[in-house]
Amino acid sequence: MSRVGKKPIAIPKGVEVKIEGNLVKVKGPKGNLERQMHHTMKLIMEGDEIRVERPGNLGFHRSLHGTTRMMISNMITGVSDGYMKELEIHGIGFRAELQDGKLVLNVSQSHPVIYEAPKGITVELPEVGRGVDVRIRVSGADKQAVGQSAAEIRGIDPPEPYKGKGIRYVGEYVRRKAGKTGAAQA
Image (cartoon, rainbow, N blue to C red; front, side):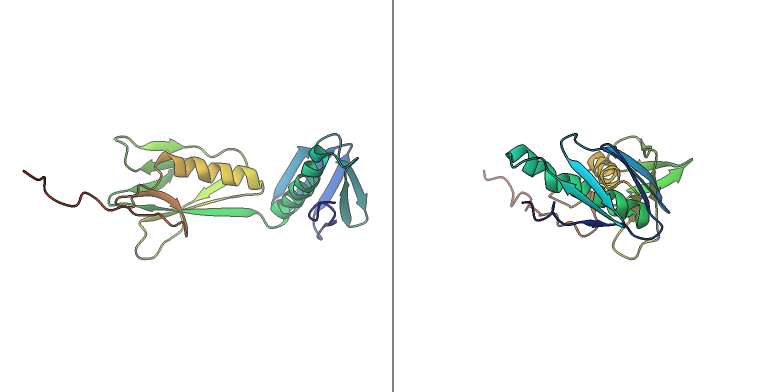
């Protein structure tokens, strides 16, 4: 039995969950989410708890058991607390600004790159301290969409290993390489 899958999911106050077959709808202060779960998983709602049961002991069912439970748990956490990822831009002259709800990045390309966040995702530029040029905050209720949006922004100009310039997650370690070591031998 999956250790993750057998734990019940507690529903906090202010969050409303509806299970219609294998369609899970979650409504809370941060938004609404719905997701279709795999048809073999059995979803049971008892009071303020949700349990996920699997039909058998096949490897496929065991792998879906914990995954299904965590997807529902992430939906509940997302609509009650929300998810957030922060990125930082390192590099001289690298800038970011918000124009009409779109993120405009001036990084290592010859032209500004415009990133439009998907529905339900908020992109902000909070104030930053010394050592970091720009910080970008990506937030929303859907954990997968927040992570995907942050990865897409990072993918515009990932950090390079020689000078460390680029867009990286806050706290991400970028392994630095040594450059060329000397003049050419004659």
